[in-house]
Picture 1 (cartoon, rainbow, N blue to C red):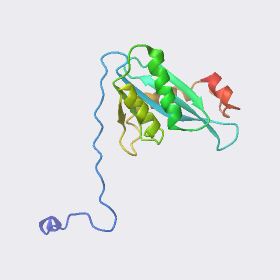
Picture 2: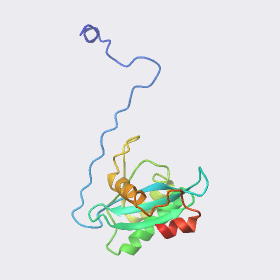
Picture 3: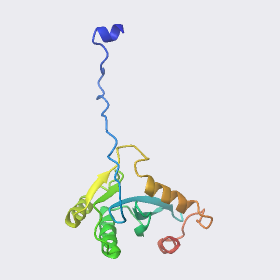
Picture 4: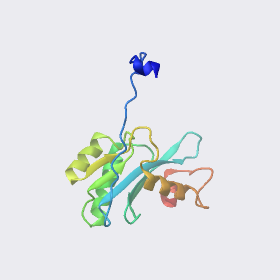
Length: 164
């Protein structure tokens, strides 16, 4: 009460004041093909510290996997090619919105240019918030908790692609 009365309740110090990031608007889909969500997850490789990356796109209305690929690195070029292939393969028109988290491949210039060319609006999660992309994360958990998922990792890229 005393601090408030004297105007002393404000940010002090050299650090910047915290930035408020509003919760993103939730996207609703009334039919398949309107809103897609995508993400990348790690698949353990043969040596500790090596990984393969599963790129996965899911339709949030039907929960259908509309595109996936496994690569040895995270790159916006791979993501752009995946989105373009998924749009062509689905044949139901392009989605209005593609939701993703804030990873560097998700915000890469190549992917943004591809989305703009296809007429798809990008949507992103809040910074440092892990639960704004629940559809993709839930599917990754389901994938990794299958009984036949290799506990010691995949021996090579082709094995990872075959398993997925």
